[in-house]
Image (tube, rainbow, N blue to C red; front, side):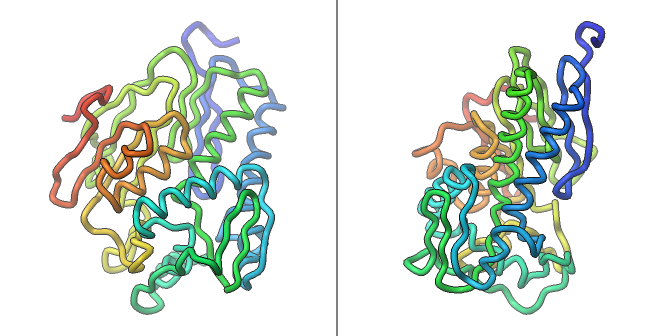
Length: 289
């Protein structure tokens, strides 16, 4: 048993990022194993960086069956594809590879930008089944890491740890009655913050063009309709009830104004333009400096 008020931390690296899980009492060996298994199983399904993953088999076209998580993920992507007029799409994998963000992490462009395939009659994501008449490279990273945070949280709850904080490289989910104050990293200076927010029983996810940046200012946030990097927004943060939605909306804010998304989602946000201007929710719990 830990001293009163002292959290116990379980830290490890997985899916290319650092994970930190804070709980009131130390996680049992069984709980740790359950968390690791959830992550390994998710990666084996959804990673485009693994040739043996389930979705990688779509590189030759055909169909795949996903676990139950696939239905919610597909529904969310379909909604955001509609709200962004195709700018946010799980079919953006080929466009990312073209710019050098490929399975080998070459970060060497293979030519000019190419638009993603269109989500039409040749590509179908229905429930837990994906079918494509043509070869496609899926990338679900804009929402997938958030969904994985949610799944890890569920595993912790099932293991008897209902109050916890899961932090996967800055994508966070907090469950518990005590607010957690979180700094918002400055997009141009990692050692400083532009503000703070209070996180209580919600998720906080971020997207920034300074992360995963390489040659000639290329980065991982693309407009799927053009295959080009978005240069009008540099950072965004979203607070929502679950991490999958928060993660996805943080990317969507690079592509459409907040009001477009607020018409169908309940969330709070901060959005920083490339000119340094900040937009934020009127009811944001926190402060910008």
